[in-house]
Length: 352
Image (cartoon, rainbow, N blue to C red; front, side, top):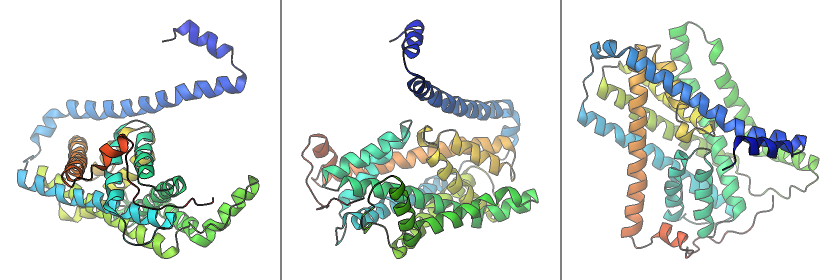
C-alpha cells in the first residue's frame, strides 16, 4: 500500500482535474460512511442511554406473530422479483411467458445490496442476465426503469399513508409536500410521450441518434408495474407493522404510518448508493417517524429489530432460491459462474 508521503507525491504529479477526481473518489465514500457511522452511533447511544426507560416499556415478544410477520415481507420481495422480468421481456422484445430464470436472477442478485456501492446488485443481474441471453441494453434499461418506478411508487404510497398521519401529529403539512411533488413529477416524466421527447432532446444535445425508441414501456405497463411495486411496499409495510406488534402494543390506527414509513425508508435506502442495504439510512428514517407515536428509545429498538427482520427475509429468499435451483437440476448460478449458462431468451440488441 502507498504511504502518506507516496500518496501525496502521486496526487501532486497529477493535473488539476485528475487530482480533483482522485480526491473526490477518496472523500466521497469517507463522507458517506462517516454519516452512516454517525447515524448508527446515535442510534446505539440513544438505546444504551435510555436502556432503563426501554425496560420499563411493555415489551413482550410473541414468537408466533413474529414468524407470521415474515410472510408478507417475503411476499413483498417476491412481487418485486416477479415484476422485473416483465419489464425485461418487453425491452428485449421477447414474447410469451417469462422464464423463472429471470426471477432467480433477481433473487440471486438481491444479495448484492449488502455490498457498499450497490454495484454488485447491478452487476449480479447483468452477469446472470447475460448468461441467459438477455441483451445488455434490455438489462440496463430495465434496471433504470425499475429504480424510477420504485421511487415513484414508494413516494406515492408514503404520500397516501404517511403524510396525513404526520400532518396530524406535527400539525403541519408543509414539510411533507415534497413527496406528492416527486410523485407527480416522476409520473409525468415516465409517461412514454414525455420520456420519448426528453430522450430525443438529450441525445440531440449529445450529437447522437435516439432511434425509434421502441423499447420504451407503454403507459399501460408503466402503470401496472407501478401498482405492483406499490403492492410490494404495502406487503413489506404490513410485515413491519406485525413485527412492531410482535414486540410491543401498537394501535392499529398507526398501521398506515407503519406501512408508509417502511416504504419511504426502503426508497431512501435504495437511493443511498454507498449505504449497504440502506444501512443507517433506513434506521434513521424509521426512528424519525416512529418517535412521533412512541418513545424514541422504543423506536430505536424497533429500527434495529427491523434490520435483523429484513435480513432474515433476504436470507430465506436467497437460500430458498438456491435450494430450488439445485433441486430442479437447473443450477443456473453454478452454470453461469462456470460459463455454461443456457440461453433462455433470444434478446435482440436494442438501439438506444
